[in-house]
Length: 483
Image (cartoon, rainbow, N blue to C red; front, side, top):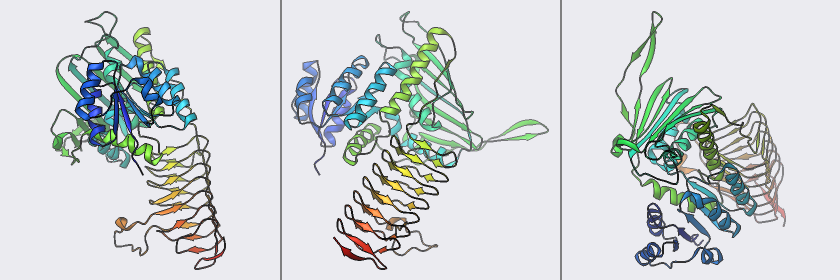
């Protein structure tokens, strides 16, 4: 399969870094910038043509990356999506919540990837921190705060909140897993009486977590620090430190002696990280999301949630009041007895019924029915319009295309020779189920086989080899009756 080709629109301050990374990935097809000298420089350095925006829209290039001033994001993204392009737009997604909602709807209507450049969601240190939170290493989260401070870069078109805080909001929402209930922001204007140079934003969440973000471009030194406090430990992501010190766990404890809390401090633990350029990882994720037809980690909806917090913060700055956010409407249904881990992608209209568990990294399409006591994941892919009946488990390596029916208690395996005392996760075998397949109740699909489109697996059958499209399989071992 040929890799999708990309045009970067905006080759200036930040865009030049995107141009470099997509060129290194071998997918840069063209560059575009209203400043012809910037476009010409990038064109000559990376030996790709420079195009006007109109030429990009009419070209066969499949994806665009928008790194222009924020005021242009909505219009450029809208036109690119309407032209059938996949879009990676730098933060913020737009400057207005309603405009962001429009972009998300267009992306869904034209079935194109919309990704927002919240870079730190791809930083190895933040990904490791999020895993610590997910595993419960820090216990129950209590408080999160982030400092993003520097001297400059000063802007006249947006305040410090919109310039610096989107990254921090994105990280905090990613850790907490929900929008805050209330937002209160304060700030001060020193260089320009209409543009805040310093802001502090306070957030409270339904689950009891609180957070604040302190951003400033009038600070004597650079600081980029995220602190996460749980009842079982603390962690600090300090991006200004060397890689071997960027993420530390502080396993401090608080004990009560005679009714008085006492701190029991412990030595910090440095978390091993894979050294990698976050921007390169972000660019790779965009390409992989397109090629694998999965929602990116920072998709349009994630960008919209960040924008909702920014908008509420801005309103609070002007009104000096606490702003209540409207409760987020989840576009799919999850029964109260079921669990959906963070990091899942679930499509609109899907229903997940009683006592089911969707593990981290799983992708489920639109309008699916997930029955009772179903386990899916991790990293399983389920297409659109699938029905998975009661008591089914889909393990890592299973891919269901659109319109697959899994009957009650049908079984998917993942290794051929499992042993309780021997770790064999590196021996998982993929099982690919093509479009429209029907699998009967209590059937067993042995790992490593492919089920052809619209084949039918009879109730109780055991599939031990590949099945051709439209075939009917019955018995143990499964035999082909027709097709």
